[in-house]
Length: 295
Image 1 (cartoon, rainbow, N blue to C red):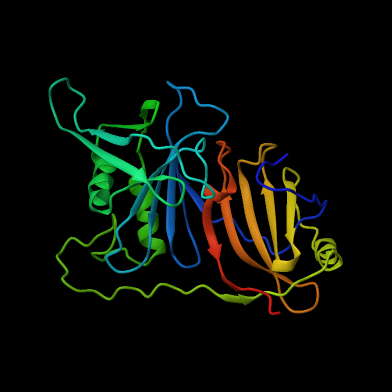
Image 2: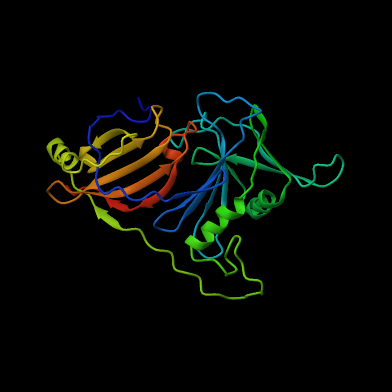
């Protein structure tokens, strides 16, 4: 049973399923939302360490499409509370070794602090140095409290960051993370980020939800469908899980509009790999602004 919802289970799934928008680059997963906010995640390597049922710690890189945006870099430990709680205080570090020969090369250490999203965020002024370390270091080590010396192979991070550049229309501009021009450009036309749609929600009945589900029975054989209706708020959460633990698949939030059986997508998160991480940490690929049901 999925742990994140108090579910009502339906045999049929919601309609309007869009094509998956999370790409893989080696062990990196990357995706961008309809607002061109891009996120990449990479799990730590667990060959030499054990992790509990909470899931595998991972590194998250998020980049907004605004001009001169600074990448957000976090370490996430699924064993800690998510956005509904505060993680336990801990010494959280990322260490870069630029030469494996003993006594040769440089070692750079960066510290993260608790943020309000249930993770550990590195300071903005360190973000670009950390990206450089991920792209160039011979070895990357992360530690979260008592989980020490976890290795992270950042191979193919350039491919994930180049995916950001192309999706955000920043390739061949100074604003790109990887695909920058060879010549120096002091000014450039920065693309205008797309805006999210606005949806006016309306309350609905159990019968309206049932009719919608029956009319749209799309479902793949390996999906476990769980639905959490929020009738008074005009929303319904749908998880299309790929495992019994519900730690991979697609999370969708639908909003009821009008007076009939119509629901429209207002949020989508995707996680193609089962690594013990709940939907709150999956990569967001769609978001709409919502207006609460009118009185």
